[in-house]
Image 1 (tube, one colour):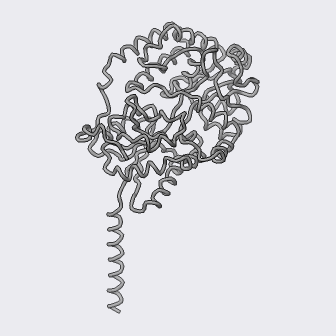
Image 2 (cartoon, rainbow, N blue to C red):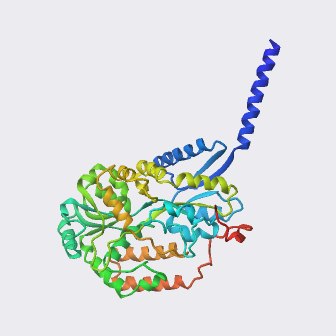
Image 3 (spheres, rainbow, N blue to C red):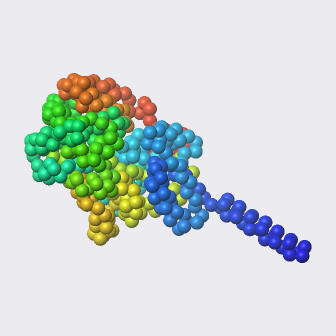
Length: 422
């Protein structure tokens, strides 16, 4: 009896030691990401699980971030002695974070990227620092009562918006105000459609000229038929059918009430000489220059970086948008685009969208422009005053050295400027 008991104890101890040994041998990849909402996190976790099943010796350690303060936390983490191995960043942030990111050999991913999205993650030095995974844009929703399509002229569009306007039940158009990062995405395309060139080139202040004054004057004709609110409030009005037109995200296409009352236009109504483009955005993955486990980090990014993985995620999380990669077949593309009405038009608008110029001062310039556009939309200042204020503030920003406050990794990684992930 004693011998049997001793045997059982030996088995338990051996099993426990084996488990501990297994855990010690498991390599860890630390991933910081912004898929923090419950549905997003579950969908992302499922992709992580599939990677871990294929790589039993690797464990992915996930740290969710919030968009409200995640950028600051990433800046601190990437400048530390122990940064995360893989980081999820917005396409607009790549230039900001490039000094702390490991350059990636473009031949590894570029042949598989959709040509419309291949520039995401590449800085002005021509080096790829991040892999685009999903892409999106704010697309134009128009109420079916307007009776228009993408061939409508700018003048006719203005007339239909004004005719639809009948507050407090209906408003011709919704403009986003006082909502960081969203004002630009939901208002700047209208500036482009009206002939302005704001954020079309660097230095930012160069576009604060007479063409911008004229563009704002065109938008000013819409203001009597508009309502100014933050993004969530505008989306709530779309669900109630109260807006004639609004730029919003593809997440609304998951709502049958929206799809029954609205259609998505593949281009934004615009003046002759413009393209009706929206702003291209996207979610990217990058490897920290100071990553302690580069090899497994790269394997994890390669696992994510396929149409099939991104398709699964985009189908589960509609607001993610579309894969940045070329579909493996027309059937795979159609499977994604046919999931609900209007997805094809939204995809066309996304592929027609424009990536804003990459510069380390982008976020500061964005804040300036959003503040001034909000004042203009509330009619607290004229188009001339708005452009003058933008020019002054953007010019002052342009005089600040681009490298005065970069994200700088700690030594010894600063010396690895030419290192490339293979």
